[in-house]
Length: 128
Length: 476
Image (cartoon, chains in turn blue, orange):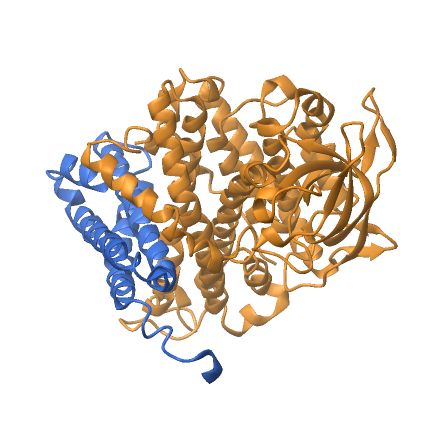
């Protein structure tokens, strides 16, 4: 879904930093999904321990995709000479903030997922 | 005192320009939703939210609901506001015309719902639960039950609830003990105790239609032996008029952290007459129609509280003069600069805004997929839209509600010490927001689900993508 969107819009210069951010997030998501498929079937605790980060990662990418959709629409509106130029420019600025300051959280989530359940479950219940 | 302005411009941008609602006018769910009508409804709902609901939000929190001998009184002003809500026809906006609804898209319904929640979360829960109950009845009940209950629920004259939790079981519903004994005439007698029932008893509607999970004796163990019943507070006569009280009573209401204006009830069922919805032992599946709807609604609560908290943080940070900008005075004639000049304040505002605007896009985009899952032209598109909703609903529920809390907390932080003082209203937002990650399936349990659903969903997502389709065509 995101890949198709990235390919379709790869020549739009203004979208490039946003598409790069989306691509990065989607790559982390895919890698997390692969890791869980390869490891969580042997040990369900890996899925349980990574579930929060996986949902967050999926959420980051879907929100990133929304920012790209909105940015694309706003660029088109600006190009056709919209009356509310400020609204659309603010959309683009906020989209760039999302990609530079929020999307990087994807790497943290992936790292935690790939760390698995071992350290999460290491203490005996009696040690708490 | 906090204020709320509905984000009409942003909603119009999303509905018309990003999602292109008009492009779907050939489909049943969208055929009446002309751009002019959509805009008019957004404007009216925005006015209703800011002028009727928002002014009783803070007072409703202070006063809370009161319980006296089985009766619950909602805070001052709630009855009048609810009457207006019913008179204006908000309840039936997206309901089928067969039962008196207006058959408008769920996508638009979500936008309206966001406004109502942002203006007054506790109030918005009453009609929100009715809508969920209505959906379950539409999807699973017999025609006779539909005719008897739907029309007045769709006007909002009667309200609805969902009854799952019992004192000893919340997430693990296989443990429920509420019994449904067949009475021999096709009806059942329901006995047991349900807790944490939002809007379980109140003075807003003439009747309350409880949807109750219970076990028919002799059925399968665990969740496979659970059935779903309609249990009306007042019996409904054949001519539609109200009869005697049924055997369900409110035992008490909870004192709680937030959403004080919405009654959280203990309901005691004592030989209450219940009507089976759908088949015996299929209650979990049937209730999940309501739960999925409710989960989207709960995700929306996260977004809504984030927006209203953000709006008030913006007002305050532009107004509050403290310190000077690091790059030199921006308000040289004043004693100090407004705190919005400070990068750390900007970081907070941008984080709030970046979440709120994309969350709104995601909520409406998912709403569009809900509509398409019902009314897209071919089976494949319907299935595709349905898969997308199944994948995104847990994301929306979990992430948006967590972010609702985070954003409400950031907004409070922008107020400094005043954020911690009740009068400013920011601490109410944070208290109200805190329930959303818990109810409708606690996050902790939802997040176990990627093993069962998420991975399957993501896997499907990947496969669709490789085949060059999947959601993108379903919704841009």
